[in-house]
Every structure is written in structure tokens, then in C-alpha cells.
Image (cartoon, rainbow, N blue to C red):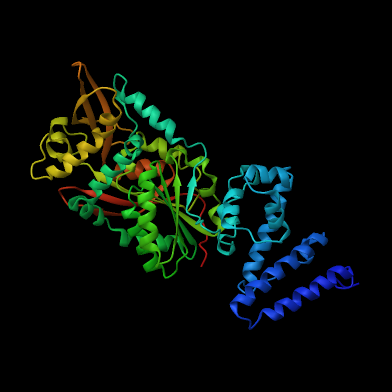
Length: 489
């Protein structure tokens, strides 16, 4: 007996009606197409409700869908149903966990309606489903009115709690203020943007050889799609410059940029800049408000590169890597979810003198440690001091006088490196004095840095010097080591 003969007459009638409507759609004006399409979706809903075997009657293409799109949707429907069943979740329970109406979930699973971008985002947030970004048919999902898929709030992230903790620390007897707190409130973000707008700072950042880095990144990724995970991007100028180069040199637009930052105000600035700049050049931009120290919690970014046929590039530009409290611990623990073949791009400041030299010699050679920057930019230094002192000035319960001083720290995890420790010396109105470490910036011996990162499983692919003698810096591209991967050609 053929499949057609085994179909009940009611379903045969629905199939005939659907075929007739699909034929009628061709050549009709757009307004009539929309009305007929709504009738077509209704008939498909009746058919799906009567049929117990979805795979016999998969979703048929609409006038705007290719067979590849339909296959992608059907594959997702089947995956969603399998994952829900494996997790032991009823449709009602999954709908509750995902924050969706049960009817919407049933319509997606049965094929009565296409998933929307918002519904996919809700389903991705349910850990029991173990969905990955690559599993979801973003490209064929329906756009929700007044909704653009551009922003995620990382699980467990609580900025209000962090501001309260900052206030408690500022009003304590001193100590270390975690650097992420510097960027939390809108005024701090504004102060940072003022620094980024200074000509000298922007020119130094733009001299980074991102064009050369982009070429090597594309060689490493082959024909794979590329996901760029930007950690602490600030205003995202460097990251956008890199994406522009990748798109220009790559000849295709299969590049996704994920902006992950602890600061909502800065993330808004970064997202707007990236979205506006890249709007006509291809690429997709997402914003994620979260703490990059908690990367292993963010499963959306930790898919299997081989299975997804995509390559991941983690970026830490603007000397973000140099500001970490313990760089090796960060690489070991926070980048643990990245796999063999994934890439890491970071820029660093180079040491002005070997750590084998006397401390006085290092202080004399490093402009950042001099009390007055001879021949340097005093306006930039003053902006930095205002930025570093800002949180203490705003959240202290009493009036304070603040002076930012910089001291040499030779107790660094990576051999050959030293740090400039910016310390805010605070005098209260009572005359009492306190001291806070507010900013940490390391300088490195590049060979010893490469060796240290190699021991953590990240091998250097290439590096490029920039910044000149006055501000020597280097851009590094590293690759997570492991079994050799066959790149998709």
C-alpha cells in the first residue's frame, strides 16, 4: 500500500487543498499572497493536528522558503522534540521553563508555525535541552515585531549586587577594587569613552596590525564560519576594525561578533557602534552582558567547533589581558570551554626593561611609572587619573581627596613580566588615610609570555609589533593545541 493510499480521506482532502492554495499563490499580488499564505498555514495546522506522523508530512516550503530552509526547520523540530523527551519534560513543563505559551511550543514542534527569533532565544536558555547556537535555525526564523535578536543577559549576572559590593569596598579601610567595577556605572563608562576619544590613544590603538592578523585568522579558519567572541571590548573600536578586515579579506559574510562586557552602558555603546558600522558589510552582532571570568557558564558560546563547522576566535584587545589579576589562571579556568583549533587574539605592552635589572632602572625607563611623563601626554594621564578615581569619588560616604600614584610590582605570575599598579591614596575629611589598588597593567617579555601560554595549551601562530619605541606593544594570535583538525575547504 502506498503512502498516499494509507492516508485517511480527511487528510487527503487537506493535502489537495494545500496543493491548490500553493499553486494559487504563484503570480498573485503581494497582498493576496499574504492572505492566501495565512489560509495555507491554517490548513497545515489542521493537517498537523490530525496526523500522528510528522515526518511523513514535513513542513512544505512557503513562497519565500527554499527546500534547504525547510529541511533546516524540520531538522530543528525533530531535535527539539527529541531533546525534550530525553530531558523528561512535557510540553507544558518545557513551555514553563522557557517562558513561552504552551501553544507556541506545540506549534513549533508540530510544524503549525515557524519558530520566531524570540522563541529560539527562550529555548536556548533552557539548560535541560542542551541546545547550542549552531542547532537553531536563526536564519530562517521569523522576526518578532519590535524585536531584534541582539542582547543576552548572562545567567547569574547581577549588576545591582555588584554596585552594592563596590560601594562597600570603597567605604572599607582599603584594599583591592576589582577592575571590572571601574566600568559599571554610566559615569565610569562616559569617562572611559572620553579616554578612547583622545587622538593619541585612538591613534595608538588603530596602529595595531589588525589587517595582517585578519589574513592569518582567515587562513586558520579555512571555509568555516567564524564566531568572534570579544571579551571586555569597551567601545568595540578595535573589534569592529578587525571584523571589517575579516569581511573585506574573506569574501563572505559568515562572521558573528559576540560582545561580552560587564558594563551595560559600555555594551550599549559597543553594540551601537558595531551594528551601525557593519550594517551594510555583512556579519551579525550580538551583545552579552556578563562577566567574562564566568565564560564556562555561557553554553551558547561553547559548542563543538568540528560539529558546527565553525571556528571561534576569542579577542582580548585594548590590553584587557594585561589587566587580569592572574592571566594564567584565567586562561586555565575561564577559557576551559574552548577546543582544539579555536583562536585567541590579544595585545600586550612590552617590558621597557628586563626584570633582571634593578627596580630603579625599570622605573626610570617605563613612562607609566614616572611621576611626570617627560615628553608624554599629560592630558591623557589626567583623564586616566579621573577615570580611576571616579568610583571612589562617587560612592564614598564622606568627602575625600584622592591622588592616584603608580608603583612597580615585580610579583607577577608570568616570568619576565612586571606590573604598574595604580593606587588611589584617599584622605577623608577626618584626616584619616586609606589606599586602594584600582588598576593593574602588566608589561611582558614576549618570548617568556609565549612559553607560559604554550604550557597552558595555547600555541603562538603569529605576532606583530606596534606602538613604536615610546609605547612598545605586540599583537599575538594563538591557537588552542590538540589533535590536528581537517579544515573545511
